Length: 352
Ligand code: PEP
Ligand code: MN
Image (tube, rainbow, N blue to C red):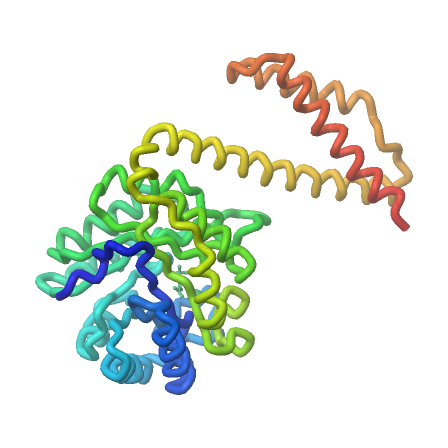
């Protein structure tokens, strides 16, 4: 099998709809992607793992027939998601070039072992998405099982992790985890899936750029001929034309420079990640402040309750000292955060 993961041109583009829906939808999408040079590997889910029953669960083998036609008619390799041994057998029977394992499956060692056993001695390419939970060991284990089955072309897809509660991205990236994974498997290509990470077409650009800055090998981006009519993941899909302009807008930093930048670059990346996390937490804190504002307004309470401020500042100064952060810094930072919270409460209380 030709090595489709080895590509001197970055990024490798894995694009196509979330799901195969009809022959026409699949063909039109593939044709436009091919014509605009936005596809190295065409993806489409034919068996869809859905969180709740009664959602669209995929077209099954019909999709494999359409993909086989597309592969021949347009000369592009094709990929589907597999979740068990029978999917693997069907996909291989229909000439699917690349198999990917989804986030719900890579989280399950039984399913992973079943898939690995069905792949023994097969010359194919397998892409393994990170499991839903931010667990480096589980992701590593899934990759090891497939590698031990003798599959030579393996890559990891980073699609972000489920977190409890509200977050900007549907599946926050937690970039440290894939960076740590790379340290374990130095030759493992790493592909970013900003579609499932962001959960919205609005975030595709910033997430794709981040992946390029972190030297990822490729992108898996969902593209649909008519996203508004998509049967799954509607909000995050973009048309082939939009995809082309997204790719053209990416700044590809010199790979050598990124590597040479080495330690310092990586440390700076982590600083940026910490700052992003600080901002996420601040956003959540202001949201809580507004909720408190609503409560106080409804119950006729005053905004500033001095005893509460004393309680907050004493608590964080003690905790800060345990972490080696000076009381002066903690005081200054929290005074400012508290003031901002009061402003948010104020706005709520004075709104009509
Ligand atoms: C998909 O790629 O359409 C998919 C279901 O992804 P994930 O496993 O990342 O949720
Ligand atoms: Mn999807």
